[in-house]
Length: 361
Ligand code: NAD
Ligand code: IPM
Ligand code: MN
Image (cartoon, rainbow, N blue to C red):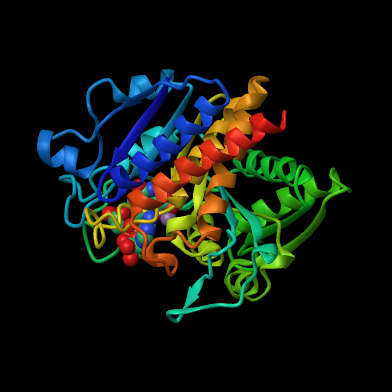
């Protein structure tokens, strides 16, 4: 069973299309997926006084994988000031130490800069931000409201969590273009010194992987100016949050960016964007980030040896490429299509490509 938590705002709109795409891709390979939906988030909190439906967390722990939309609505907070819905996100991410955020530029998508299409080419953008997901400046369960004229956010970086995420980045790079960039602020912050030392130590054990290092501030413009120079970028929690939102611009923007939260046994998949209340309910949200998260989920399910999940994931990603290259795109990436139209075109393309595959056999 795949647990599905659409959440707030555009979450339900994009997750609907992701589920349809995953279902079509799995069916085409003779795989049967079952989905169970659970309401959660800020709207659920407003309605019921709880951020989750009863039993949802338990069901998510039991599920083969979790597909998540987004949570959060403006002004909807818990009594202690924290955003309503955030407990769901952090509850689901607990123990999932690797936040893997790939950025690819799909054919036909021209990233908009200053409202105009930029000249970035698909062949120049294929990178992945690997964000540490369990520590750093994020202390999600702490109350938010400052009690006086001073507030402190404590940033804990441990050697064990740093090593774990850096090893993850190196194993990912081994199956890609064999290059890892460490992004930190080790000219100033002790936690980053520890992180970069762990990086150097692990790098010496992977002589086949090229490595380099950037400070976070310099990394942002470097990435935008020359994306082709980067493959895997590994960094701490908050820097990874910011770096991945910026990197998403190279793929067309937040609406296009997928992600995986991975632990040793569990996986949770979600678009990088939030609930986008400014466009919710209009059927204009870009479903590509959510659909590609679904493709990552399918590929991850293949890790136990069922190769058809890998093929289903590739089929779904290929369908997204076909659809964007035909110009069927939402307004955020320069098109006029609706969210539901993009989703329907993806499902059609999955079916057409699956038929071609069968005919070729
Ligand atoms: P956001 O990602 O929701 O939106 C930022 C901008 O990107 C908006 O202009 C929005 O319209 C646009 N955008 C985002 N996704 C899009 C899509 N699929 N298609 C087209 N345009 C898209 O970030 P925000 O505005 O800072 O946050 C809104 C709410 O979402 C807040 O409550 C925030 O806390 C929450 N949030 C949740 C998550 C999550 O659940 N993982 C992530 C980020 C933000
Ligand atoms: C994201 C979001 C979340 C995060 C927030 C909503 C807690 O920005 O998924 O990137 O920072 O992890
Ligand atoms: Mn973010």
